[in-house]
Image (cartoon, rainbow, N blue to C red; front, side, top):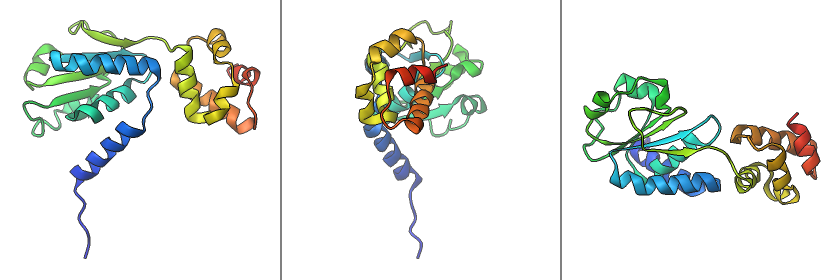
Length: 194
């Protein structure tokens, strides 16, 4: 006899796992905290961040804590999950800059929304932004891939020499470094960026 698995319980389990295992960088934590507070007071909450700054990660982290419905931009356009959209639920729409979003489109759903976007949305001025990572952000992100070896790196020097790196660039530098050096150095890290 086959055991039936409820997709909703599996989704709840995944959300719970995501909420407890994902470590946000300090800048991401600050913005996520601001958004947790703002979501209760606003119909629309917007997260603006460039590529690799954690836009989707922060949005999923918020979704895991607040519940609701998570949609990619294409799902939003296709009008999927409208039947599931309970009147009081929060709808999270990732990468909304990829689609045409208007006030009338949003109003027909009559829900609270949390959008992520790479660009400023003129129709929604209240935006929370992740602009640049700080030295502690670099250390948090590198620790995901290098573990304790991160403590041997001079993160202040790395941030000073390359202040505009995003999480994807840091990840690739860490993976490159970890594959080539048993005991990574700051010089080797910086060399991986060239």
